[in-house]
Each structure stands twice: as C-alpha cells, then as structure tokens.
Image: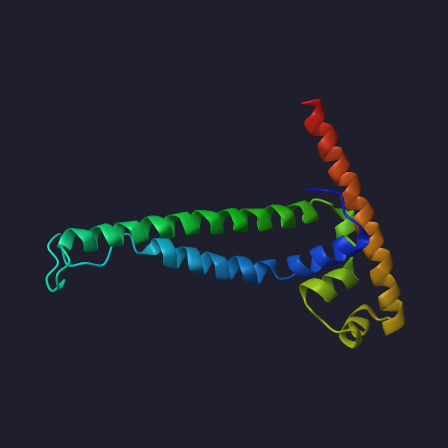
Length: 155
C-alpha cells in the first residue's frame, strides 16, 4: 500500500466499490479456465484430423490448457490484490466504520437524495460529510501505511 491524496482516495473508493462484483466475475472466469482439466479430444488418435496428426491436436489442447493456467494464475493474483486492499480498508477500524456517506456513495452506489434520506441529513450536508470523511479516511490510510512501513523497516 502507498500514501494517497484525497483525489486518489476517491478514485480508490470508486474502484473498491466495484471489487465485490469484480472478484465474483473473475472467480467465475478462473473456474471456467481451469475447470476443464482434460483437453477435449477423443483419445491420442484423433479421427478426422484432415491431414493433421492426432498428436498435434493433443499438443494443441495441452498448450491451450497451459495458457489457461497462466491466465488463471494472473487473475488469482488480481483477486488477492483486491482482497488485500479491502482488508486494509477494513483494518482502518473506527476511521472506516464512521464513513457512512462514503460507503453509501461508493459501495452501494446510491445517489445524493437516497443518501440524504438514509442518514437523515440534507443533500448539501451529506456532500460536506463526504469531503470531511474522505479527508479523515485519507489521513487514517496514510498513517496506517506509515506504520506499516516503519514495522517493515524495523524487521
């Protein structure tokens, strides 16, 4: 993790709000890639290859399987990155817990009138809360990153 400005934090929250659906979609893609363990052919001798040898069809299937494994490994790294970032956000504790307007805005993707109704404030007050909560969360994030770097340097 690295230090952020409030603008970067806003962009991060916008992206993090989509992480759950992104993780779900990516996991489905990984399952599709590695779920089919055996390549699709009817045996070592493939009938009806029209001039190609059966072994080349098998090699092709195995090569495709290896490409799928590499792609799945990359996607799993992306999933782990997203989960790490969400966990780091949750580990901010109280600073993240009181950011109700930010959560409603970026994670639940609600518009200002709905946010105002849910937090029992006017829209303009909610917008002010958003900027205050964003700066407070950015400060908490940067402090946590600094602590993490100090701990890593001490080890």
